[in-house]
Amino acid sequence: MAIEPRNLTAQLHHRAAGNPPSTVPDSAISNCFPGLEFDFRNLWRRIFEGIEVHEANGMVIRAEGALSRLQGRYLISVGGTPNLIGVRGPSPTQDDADLGITWLEWSNFLAGLVASSTGETVPAVFYDPADDGQETVDVRIRPIFVSSAVTGDVTALIDEIIAGPGELTQSLCSPWQNDYRECGCYYWAASRPDYVNVETTATGVSTGNNWMARSREPKQYRPDNPSDASQISYEELFRNWQGLLRFIVEGRDHD
Image (cartoon, rainbow, N blue to C red):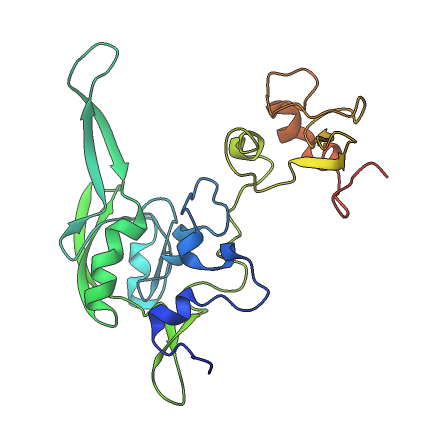
């Protein structure tokens, strides 16, 4: 007997035949800087109808119609919940210093509001740096998931108004970001090729190359180390990643 998941939670946790465990949301670590499976921040950019906010802070980067005046302002509070907070702590000269402000992570900041007020309007406060003023505007929270046109039930499909094809992965690790160089074996799971040209020796120990190594000879693996002269440096990667990085075909790049 086959059991077909019908409720939204079951659908989100369902792993289709042939898909690896990393394809379901509960396997994601939500490491958004740079992110491994997908970048959750991109899910929140269009959560408010009529405006689009920057994925890492509250700046309104696009606004439509009557809300167009909000473009360039910062969303600092929604439904009475602030989106940024002041930070205090030790500094080089003080035990208790004002360390400025930090933006809250969108998933934590909006989780309660989405659960309680999807489809409804809520008061949002926008800060205008041009005149150091604030304005409260009612904004509608869009549903994240598409509802079935047949049954009306909420499905596990993300509405393309919220995130179109490719947008959940478009801000993952890029060659001109430090984390592209840093995230690798012995530190963090890599979102790029890591250990390539791998072969098993007679003793059962594998040998291969670090993808960031300048040369494929001698054939040995050395852990990622940006200060290792035998490996590509940050500056070289930023300036000429397209010339230095090699295509991997079936795990190999030297044939």
